[in-house]
Amino acid sequence: MGSTGIVRKIDNLGRLVIPKEIRKTLHIRDGDSLEIFVDCDGEVILKKYSSISELGDFAKEYADSLYEALGHITCIADRDQIIAVSGCPGKQYLNKRIAALVEEVMDGRRAVLINQPEQHSSCIIIADEEGKCRYTAEVIAPIIVEGDPIGAVIIASKKRNPGFGELEFKSAVTAASFLAKQMEQ
Image (cartoon, rainbow, N blue to C red):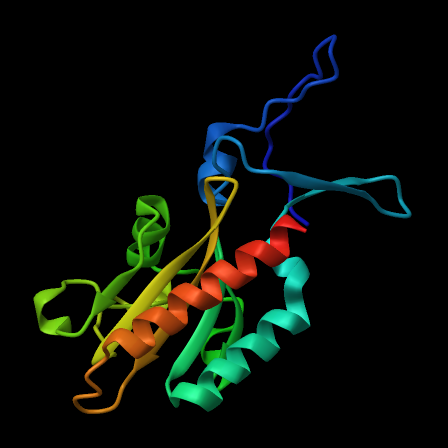
């Protein structure tokens, strides 16, 4: 763990301001939750909290089921990264930062179907795909809990002319709705 060289005082209410530069680097937005840990040396560790990552194995099993049913790459993401993937090597996507397009869809709170990637400048799932559209079709369905987007279900294909339609769209929307209900419990 490296020092940033930034020192902050705790105010009389016990609050600490996390500098804007650090929040920006770590993609911490207003309203985000942080987990607080204390290690054996007494160091305080702050970690961005992801409620959907608590689904862990369940999210992976759901992604596997969608892949088996549809035969397309299936990813489940929280607000920042892919937490479950099926239909391709996990290390290619797992724990990778999501692309701006996925964030935009989540913020828009509406599922999208992209069947003609040549009409979209950023048909990508993870941020390190360097803006190259690698998919011939894609569905992104945000997971909405209490009005807030907490993640997304993404179904994508690299196959030639997969012709995504109502089945893929409704499958992603249903999965997102089901996962949202699991989070509400």
